[in-house]
Image 1 (cartoon, helix red, strand yellow):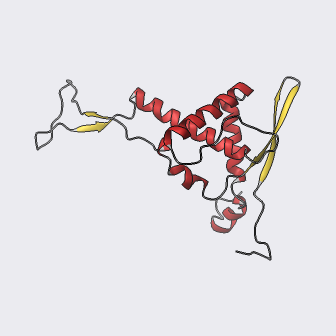
Image 2 (cartoon, one colour):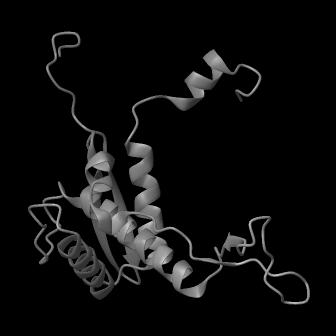
Image 3 (spheres, helix red, strand yellow):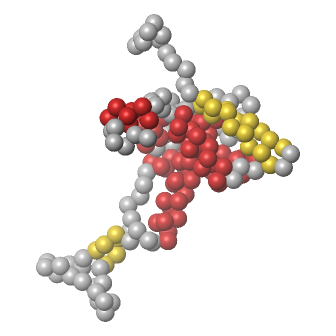
Length: 173
């Protein structure tokens, strides 16, 4: 593909500064590449599990049965183990995204080695190791959220305000 004689375009990047007391570090974030999300979705470690199911009970605590005589079941989205698993998957995904955003920063070096294939346990261990490195460096969960948010903005070159004016004139500022 060529656009205006160019065969490629430089990915968006931005520098952010983290400060603590009199110390600071500058991180250079680069937008995640096209296809990153598709690649990640192939790794089962990041699949969202199905919520556990349990029998539906009436107000007196008896199991409700359907017309066929079988117990009716409902999803239990509040199951503590399920909620904890979702939180762990979310944190691993966020960690991996932050790793990808920092991949091109020449000043940042992680000790953990990125897996070569799509082996689930290797990716889970890799994410956990990266998270431990970030924690050991002093990065907080809120800073992870901020880094991810900046990265999300970098991942598009579209001027959203201009787009709103064109397609949604009543919502434009």
